[in-house]
Image (tube, rainbow, N blue to C red; front, top):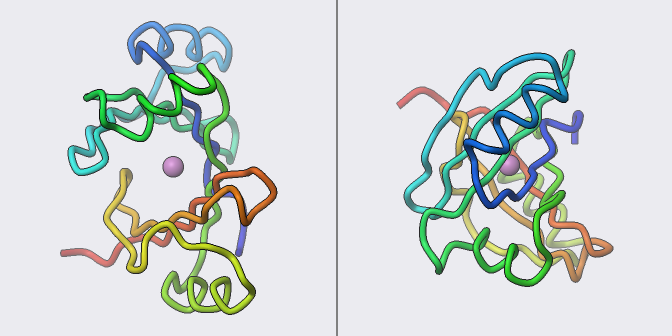
Length: 135
Ligand code: CO
């Protein structure tokens, strides 16, 4: 784990939350992106060297829709930047963490991502992300 890559925040209405976070951070979202495979629309903000990802569900089966139903809006995950996601997944699995996906998948922002089950990581949904090689 090299650094925190971004914080993910679940929101009900991406446009309304974009306006709110633009006011909060004093800068607009620099990118919006839909990840159809995950059922989410995302936007990204910069705060100095740090990034915040807002996530809105695009269908009722989306993990974000389920999260909002259970917990409401708020911090959804912490993403860590890793150099080699396969090696890091193997290391964490050997340490007893539960991986939510066995192989990395393509996430927003040109990343390969994998998630750890919050049950095995202190109640925190952890995302590992590695800059994806160009296709
Ligand atoms: Co994320």
